[in-house]
Every structure is written in structure tokens, then in C-alpha cells.
Image (cartoon, rainbow, N blue to C red; front, side, top):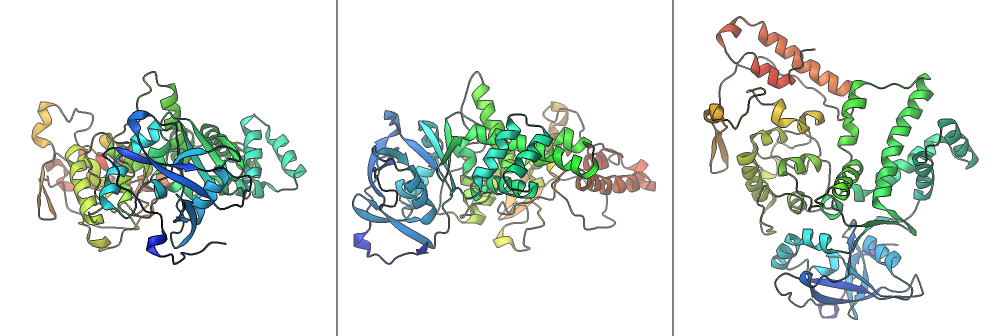
Length: 471
């Protein structure tokens, strides 16, 4: 059972020695024939330039209030219960295992060291021979993987139902086990994106079960499609596909499992096989549903993925300072970043964040998911014209900051005549269509106003709101 952190005298705990510039620490996990024996390891310094043969661990810390101890260089080192479980399952019976584990290899109490080491995270995971993903104990994962494998092998729906019955299960129990597997906390960590979205081999541990991460992501993709088809047939005796599920597949687009699988496949099949670099705007959209214990890691956890916005790792900054400086840089490159600001989960004072700065700890934006991926085209009043051409240079957004106030040049399009509450659903079908109908209704009202002929913007403005959807 997990227990509250034990009171151990400071002089008894493991002590860190300073790291040289660009060095890292590595943990050597000592073997044991007894699974339940206390964890023992040694900690050493190494340089990434020497390409040491280590594996990097990707896991969820778990509740920091409940810890246990492992022996590091003969002294106790507090770790969360989940990390201790991971090390126990990773420990070999006869051979030592060289690992990089952030909670032990980084002195979490040294802000300067933490800044430097977090800044090297991308190199650390790219430099590993393999990434080890710890999803937690087995629980009902065996059931989920068994039936996902059947789906992956092309089983028919009738055969699938028979197999479910043979195992003394119901369809609901199978779906529940699959949802539990793909809904584990690891999938929602902000850090996992930069830890596994690359071409390095990645092995998933679920208790004593081991499988390839790419295989697990493929199983999820097959499971989602099969479940949709099965449920449609059971409900209506026909397979139903609407334009939103078959073309846009919004649910899949915002699923971390799908994102990881798709990005890793891109890296594996790319001829150049370059390191993964994406835009900050795409990264923020992609990680909106991800979570982290430290609010600042919503930014820092993406630094290993982005190459267009310069973010300096500095844990002495407050959440407000970091979010504001990052948003300022994003606005310089992507004026449409303002679409990220509003969220129904955002509090009014939102921890002293300026109103123009998104609270990235909220998991939802008021912009429908599909629009977020088309932000450049969908919310541009110049239509299909090239915004970077000289013709439109005078109309590029311009702003400056006065203290924490964002001052922007703007064009008055009209006056808001009414407001209403709408529920934006991040799924497929009705939620998206209802949102579009709200925009389309307002568009029709604007177009029938008597003043429309006098306002040259009466057509592009509502078209921007509706993405040229007049239905």
C-alpha cells in the first residue's frame, strides 16, 4: 500500500553532486532474483556526446504526497509509488539495466540544473537506444489486448461476438477494458508527446505485458473503427457514416493515441527521418487536452517538439509570466493564436492572466476542433489571397504591449446586437453542425441589414465566422 512520505533525516538521503555543462545522470538498476526485494541502483554522470547505451523511461509520476524509497548509491531516495512499481517491473534478474529517469537523474530541488536538464530533454530521448513506456499494472489490459488483436487480424463481427461469449464476457465489458487501457493517465501527460513522437524504438510495459508502442497505437485505431461499426449495426442493423465522422474524424484528430501513432509512422517512413519539429500553434492545439502537475510544463513539455518559437526554460518564472511571454511570441508569428484564448473552463480572474493570454491548463477551447486545424484559412478575412503578399502588407495585424495590456490595430466590422450561450461539443456530427448553424444564422441576419451595402466588409466578415459555410 502507498504511504505518506516518510520522515528521513536530510543527512541520510541521497546527495547530488553538481553536473558539468551538458552532462546528464544515468541510473544503473541493479538486478535481483526476488521481485519484491528493495530497489537498489547507482547513479553516475555521463555525456550525451559519448552515446551511452541507455533506455529512457516515460511514465506518470503519480501522487507526490505518497512516496516510497529506493536505494541510490546506498542511500534512500524518495520516489512516487508508481515509479517504484515501474523500476520493479523493469529490473532484470541477472543483468544491470542503464536507465534515464527524470525524478532521479535530475535534482528537482535545483532550479538552475532543472532548467538546463529540461532543456536537454529532446536530446535525451532522441539519444536513448529505446524508450520504455510504463502504463501501470496489468489490471484488465490483457482482455483489452486480446480482443484488440482479434480486431487487428480482421475478425468478423459475428466471430468477435462468439469469442466474447466464450470468454464469459459481455461486449460492454470488452469495451470497458479497452477504454480503461487507452484512458490511462499516461496518454494525457503533456510530456509524452516529446518523449515518444520520434523514430526511436518504444516498448510499452503494462505489468508483465510488453508490446511495441506502434503496435498498441495500431490496435487503438482498429478498435475505434470496429467499435463504431459494431455499435451501428447493433443499433440500426445498418452501418451509418456521416460526413463528419468519415471525412473529418474529429474524435481521432484529438486523440493522443492517434496523434502518437500517426506522428511516429511519419518519422518511420520519412526518407529524411529528421527530428520531429512542428509549429508552436500546432503543438498547442495538439496538446490542449494534455495534463501536467506543474502548469508551466504545458509550455516546457512541448519545447522538444517546436522550432519556430524560442522558449527559454526558466522555472523561476510564474505561470502568468511564462504564458504571457509565450503568447507574445506566438502572436508575432501567428495572429490567429487569439483563437486559443477562450475556454468555458477558464475562470474570470484565471490566476492573474491577461485576457489575451490563454490559460493552457484548461482542456477546452470555444473554437470547434475542426476549425482549430484550419485556423490560417478559416479565420482570414482576405479569403484565399496570400496574406504575405505586398498587396496585404498594410493589413497584417500589428500590436504592442502597454504593461500587460495588448493594444492592436483593428477594423470595425459591426456592432454586436445579441449574445447567446452555445455548447461546443468536441465530437462528430450534431455538435459541430449545431455550431455551424449558429454562425450561419448570424451571417444571414448580417447580410439582410440595410447598412450592408455601405459596409464593404459585410461579406468577408460573416464568411470568416462560418468558414464559407452558408448551410
